Length: 361
Ligand SMILES: [Mn+2]
Image 1: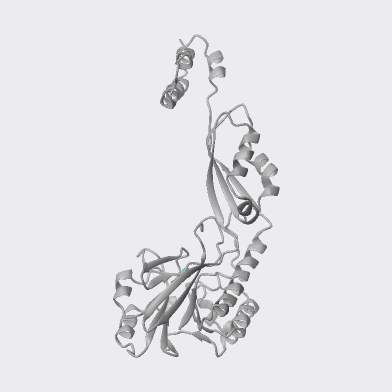
Image 2 (image 1 turned 180 degrees about the vertical axis):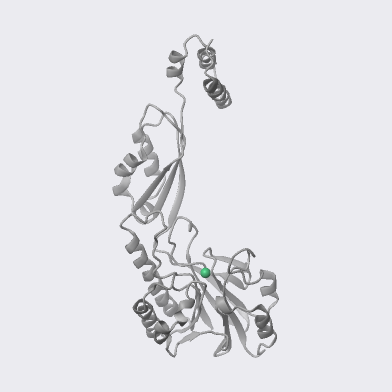
């Protein structure tokens, strides 16, 4: 049997807390996250998958309107896939009366305390919603597995950090169970925790906390032999990058450095956050708003964080502190034949200390 494993789409998330919340890209981003979901439905069918596993947090919160849920489920019903859905900590609301009618379809399978497994040909799919996870019940279910079938388990929660509000159990415990594949949701970063236990991660990132490659897991399970492949699905990436500048850089040099730090593809497509580091010349006004104004036509989305420190202007210091130890330190440095970068940082440290006490002879 062939399957596609996805999770944590958080459809209809409001994106109020993202750094680009005030830009006009929020609605586009929300639409793109849904679009990626529709694309992965198509991908599952194109790849010849029998089953789609949606391992929790398909929706973001209970404020999602019944019509919006219906719109998504209509797509699921139209596909020729058998779809297995567990509810994560964000979408337990789907069992409320207002949504129930949307969930009903022959090819859509939801789990609850009384129905914890479904058969699909030679495979049994087991699942626990976040709210009704029960470790003892899971262990019991694992002991009673039908040996003539392959077994896949769907879970939504943390299995690495016991402090997480939705911690289920540890990886070692999961490994000791008799499942051929364990599909996890909740952690947005894609990762394999053993050869047959994996978080798919979410297929489309929503902000600068999600920098890793996003995608889905396509897997094949035949005679208990598992083969999996990670397939990238994200339309755009979030990128954070340091751009170091020096005190000799002019405004235009800084613009050129930011331009050169990214390929044309990335500039046109991705959400980019630049952090300026190094030293900025105090005499030149390198204002981040001005940089964005100049650069914005070349970037889909650009944010700049200025973490530079102000460079010391040696000539200005010499004239303001004429005939002081400050002037003589600078002169000594400048008359060195080959000053090293260590000499320069020693000089700066000394100057900063002296300036702090404003020593004048
Ligand atoms: Mn979750």
